[in-house]
Length: 54
Image 1: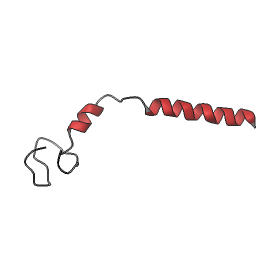
Image 2: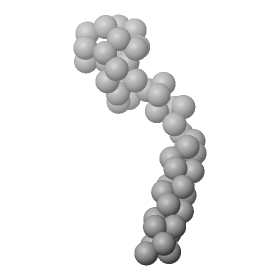
Image 3: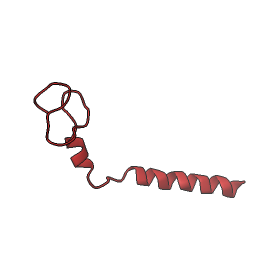
Image 4: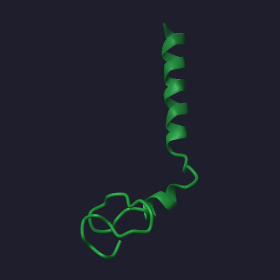
């Protein structure tokens, strides 16, 4: 029983370490969001919320 609990805790720690990693392209994804409504913009067209900036 102790072995199962310890393996579970080790698995949780490994998942936590992977969760803290920064994936490549994450900065680019955050810059693709509209600054007004927060939706993702596809292409170079303005956002569908009607605002020209973003």
